[in-house]
Amino acid sequence: MKKSKQRIVVKVGTSTLTHDSGALDLRSMERLVRTLADLQGAGNEVILVTSGAIAVGTAKLGLTERPKELRMKQAAAAVGQCRMMHIYDKLFSEYNRTVAQILLTGDDVDDPGRAEHLSGTFSALLEMGTIPIVNENDSVSSAEIETGRHKVLGDNDTLSAIVAKLCQADLLVLLSDIDGLYDADPRSHPDARLIHQVHELTPEVLEMAGGAGSWRGTGGMATKLSAAGIAMGAGCDMVITNGKRTEDLYGIVEGADIGTRFLAAR
Image (cartoon, rainbow, N blue to C red; front, side, top):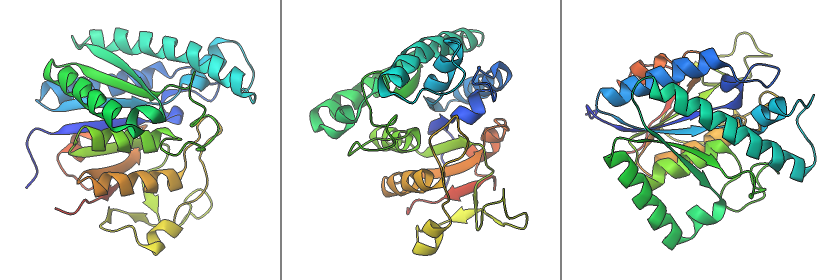
């Protein structure tokens, strides 16, 4: 039976947060913030895992394309994080919500002692009605930027699943640039079929994962299925859905058949 009040982790991808130019899509951010604030107002606990720092920093710095050199990517991330948190704080304040920034590296979640302290921090913030906003600390960690060389993290899909596990969340939602998991790539196969429920990550399901999505982000379906494995193993349902329809979060939280839901064993 679905709990009336849930602990929810929502991960939003770069393609949802930014325009093609890399500049922040403020309308999309405002819709997301309003929905999350409302879900929290209904009694749910909400944690946001956000991408976009490098893309936003790239635009803020006036660069014409995403940097290729590691130190330049990390510099862009530092600028982008500042810009994004400023906007998030301003938007959530419109709904009388308080946010907190948490930047993580792989070591933070891989070391048992540090992970325990981190879990305590999340618990304290949620108890005080705060909405934690999480990202990998791109300015010091090369894991995500260099596409997954770190043994723990490597992308914000994985990060969000680790956060969901750490916080014992009931539900993880990945807002992406696609409606969910298809049996073929819908961008090249118009007759591709959306899979609404997945009970087990079988070899057939794993084969459905394609490559990364847009140039502004790093994640693809493979990282989302990896995240699903972490979440399901922790007893947390996970849903992949289209980030352009953030209002669908209401139905997803209520258990509606939206996107692709990966069901944890109960």
